[in-house]
Length: 393
Ligand SMILES: *Cc1c(COP(=O)(O)O)cnc(C)c1O
Image 1: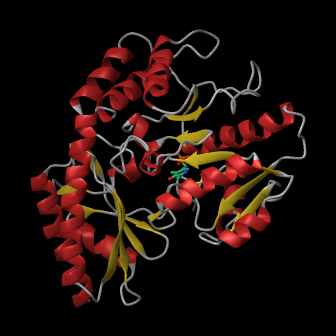
Image 2: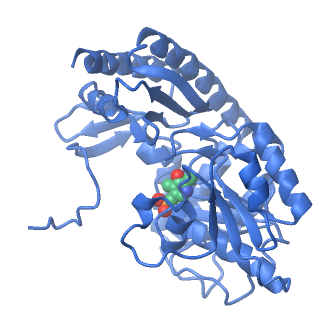
């Protein structure tokens, strides 16, 4: 008999009933150190007092009105995002997938309104992940995601990550945009080198192509800058955001320049829930905190410490781990062919530490951005225990 919850997930048999900062408490009382943050979502930890206050204060006043009316909380958050990023304008969604939908629509509409109606193609890269809607799975193009779901949305060109010649050849009169994650998350924590992102920006400028960055996972402080592309010193035309921006409340956004957004006039796009007062009140508290340079300094300090300790872990467990990769507090432990990332994650559960598997046999570490030094030390002791258990099995 089919379970009452549609069985599309492989769930671990863990039942968390409470969260406190970087800790998750299981029904049976065990305290797990959370290096997953609900897949890079709980950027300020669980039950953060500032976010709880922002949410409950808003909840006691007004939950939802729809976008038929002005929403002051939405304007406040958009205003803040415009102030601290490249963007001139923001559309709020409830998820990363919806941000992908709009990013794709916005890029195509831009060229349509310029009278270049043949420009519909969006170039994407192997290992990418942009969500689960029909457009987002077409963007990824991976057989695992599209197979069996009917006609695949047209207009995506899939390129091998790092193949510069293929990229240059793929650009034609039909190319509307390049869509890329500055650091691939699901694909196995693969950072795009700064010079490549710079090169992509230059290429887009020369050829008149829009650059869309998917910062759903790597954005909102995760890499030690407010957004990952800041490290390369270039800006996109359109950017997708979600995950961390809501700190655990479902919230996403598309940020864009005035030029790139010029096709999206009244009536061209919408969302019932997107940008509702609850989500935006929380999002504002998140961005206020994370955009503070002192906070980002602390993220970089924690990231340096965690990375150094992980290098030590890799050195101590050469049969299990090959290398540490990633940026800031978006790190991956690449496992050797002898060790399966899924087994390391599972051994982590037994050692009461939460990590997240990714493609390419990588164990992902995405701790809350405000994890403490003592918690990092404890995390390493638990990861060491997990690796030792994998080697003994
Ligand atoms: C998670 C993710 C998405 C999809 O976000 P949802 O909120 O799950 O729809 C898109 N892009 C990237 C890079 C992601 O990590």
